[in-house]
Image (cartoon, rainbow, N blue to C red; front, side, top):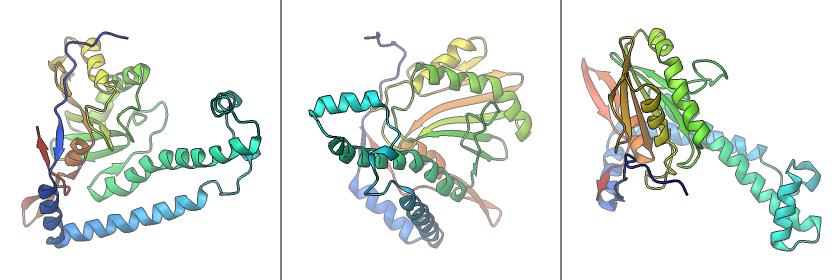
Length: 272
């Protein structure tokens, strides 16, 4: 087992308060704009989900229709002491359905939620500056970028290094694209907590520190963000998991009567 790095942050426990949740829901319900937004999200999610359900493997799907590794099937059959194909078949169907749903759920959230909060969905074309991005938002003084993962344990060491390389290799192009010299990049996770993370997401920050030691202005030691400056561009990089990500997304500046109105997602945390 690898030795724990001393600079790895120790996540604090997060406690959801039922009273605070009810208070936030009441605020949403009493605000016409918030209530209308929730209804739009509900409608969009329902349409996406209904469309996806029709594409799921049918309940009577035959074994021959599944492209499953024979070695995986061998292990599973040995574990369960199966002797018939029909026994394996009954297990594969729900597994394939869950796999299909998990694959589409993250993209579904991106397509429905990001635009509602003023972000553009990014087509992540391979071998381009967008390959590490899922969402972007231009603000007056900062270009906000995000890559989203469905859960807190989606990365391995190679992927962590690839994300660091993508940030280093593309920040100048992102700056030129937006005309801004301040980039805010978020590795966002749709659910979970930092405590549940396998910490490979934090290793994105560690890799940045090791690859750009002379450019770092804020080190990631014992924290979930860092900053570097290069070629007159300032780049903030943060790992935001679960409610941290939704809070970041939910702060939206909306011009109204020449003033800014800040709207938050209906969730608040008590940190213990």
